Length: 115
Length: 117
Image (tube, rainbow over all chains, first blue to last red; front, top):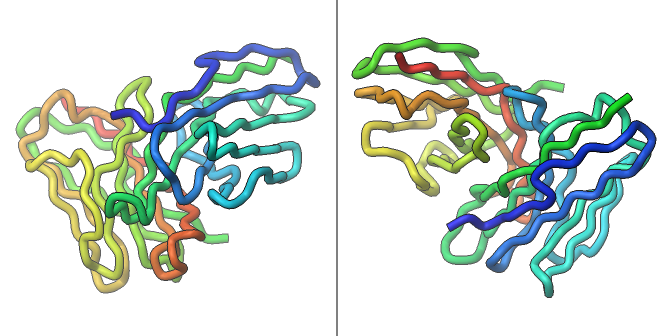
């Protein structure tokens, strides 16, 4: 079954605006990771937040994690046209149910930043 | 910094042929994961290896097999290819299992785009 669900599925904003993407998941996790993927290209690791962390920052990225609601959000501030990509959350259930670190991805959010 | 290397980057095969995809993890990473991403889909976990032993298995067809070698590179072997096997195949590496899994940041290679005709 799908672990992660993301919303919105697609988001279109103007350059300079902030973009917020949400991810919900179903089971206990060890950590949650966000990735960016340009069309048909590789997955670029953005940030990892551990289950005992609530918020993490990296440059223009801010990630929150609410384990009680089983949800996470990715905020990109002051967006640029180069941020146009698909963004995936991926959960790591290591330590739960015998998982050995494989990631379960959400469906992704397609972000379009218009110049 | 060195990244995950995958080869080939593109591969075209006929139905029922075989294919071998290679993955070279980041130096000192001991864990390798394989994922399959169909068109417009999210990546799906196939199989993983830690210290040359299979550590976990996902939705990998019986027609596929994989192994990790003494130099930690991994190969995914795919036989009796079907049209539905056309996808992007990603390899990811991490130092996670040795680091206690809390540090399991996975770094992905550029992928191999397999097209089955």
